[in-house]
Length: 364
Length: 214
Image 1 (cartoon, helix red, strand yellow):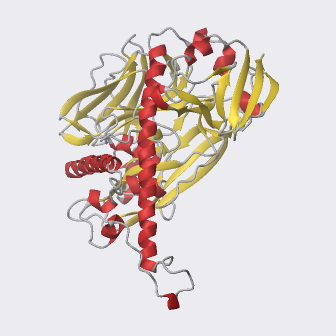
Image 2 (spheres, chains in turn orange, brown):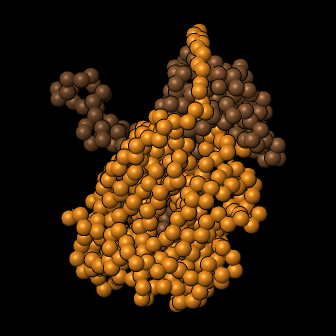
Image 3 (cartoon, helix red, strand yellow):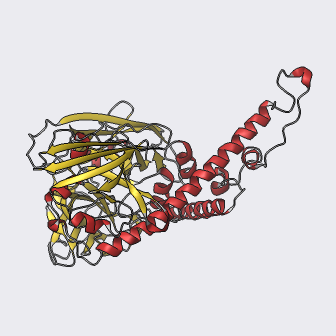
């Protein structure tokens, strides 16, 4: 076939500043999820269930994970998300937390339309998140929450882009310690701006994990632990905003450039006064990545008492620290526990402003 | 907790092995859900995995259709299931092929850039702007080569969107140079200035625009 060539010229005023767009707020609910009642064997659980997949993807993921059937709609399309406030609620809309026997062990927000940059989809991998990505067509983990339900505000001028064709999903683990079955929903409040005319630059999420690409659950000894995972940066970038997640007895989690010694962020855990779940000993205080103590939290948007002393806060940072390609970044997770466990976590999610990429993986 | 983790690990390994097995068997259907998780009840997966049934010839008096062209309801269901399995197998094979091609193309890109001779600061700002706020996915071809970059998502006020390009367009030339070899793309980009000609293919048509960045 003869290809017809159309030629046009466009003068692009590419570098003109755009006026700041008004931030809109949308709250979405995803569910229902039925949590079995606790019994003599322990809490009722829905563990590592996947939502937001259908067709062949659901069939393949169903080979190794439980798959939920409810949809996971986005709060907006062709927009930038600039803030996220996660929560878990009961069917009547009240917050589901320890005060009513419920725990948001963790939830991961996934965009099936883009690949995760640190755990790239791989059809032949034995690691669940890579296999899931290959089955679903993508696995970009762009947000996550533990029971502390940290709010994430991406620094001004930046956002997480949501395309019109993006498909969202969830991976989660929920627990019910009460003797009655419960129906719960994820309830997220998103702050966002329409992409067009916003003047916002898109950031790319990066998942950082002491159990990288596996199930994120690590074996941790009793006493003081400093756990690491290294990433040789495959792209030059600026870390715009980043936050962390640890479990009870966690002190802090930090992201540091090992090549030049620059600490990018230290996310510190927060507990209420008198909490029985504070670390049983201090951090080393050796440097900014290893603080001595935790924070004492005095209030919380969903009620500090609802946490019953469990971890209720993690600090976030907007460091704007720059990393050159091929430099080594390392996560430092301080935990000081009274006993050994096989399901502790140390995770950070950051939002990168890449210097220059032409595809998801082809970068300078 | 440890037991459930082990279970997931075993299931994942099993699933991966079954997927590989499915891909390696030209005529075999993909594994069923029951195979990876637990022993399947005898009826459902076995029906799905059964070889194609020979449709019985229907009595002429009971069917207005030509003899040999009619299927009973159960045969039709079995045939539909067999075709579904075949289509899944085709999709899986294609995903595996795309993964292999992507790895080859990645290797060629990294041959060019991993030495550290390219940096964003050395690029014309127009080039950086051209690739900002857009998702491009290579169309992979054999041997580590590509046939352009397909626009997967683009912000409405991106320079390419403003000049008429849209999701699904395949950018196949920049400044007249075909985007074929990932190893040569960094050099191409490093030599671009503020005036950039971009050409894309859309449903067999060429769409070219000269972008002049101020």
